[in-house]
Image (spheres, rainbow, N blue to C red):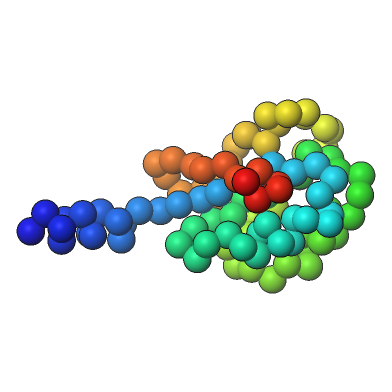
Length: 99
């Protein structure tokens, strides 16, 4: 009976990853495309990149993807704001380099 309860809890689990990024045009598509299928929402927060990061992100066809973009560079830690669209109760961070 305990195993069934644990499985039921796992099925109810909702997971989002938050990927803060800055000037990651060369790597961001690979990172987003390798997020495991059990992740319900992929939130990429662009910290005012001055390369083609936002262009690359706009070309990713993934219904789980939500892209947020700062108007001004926030620096390290600036990716944690608002988090619209992220499931509760918690969030998981994934660096732009996939680690």
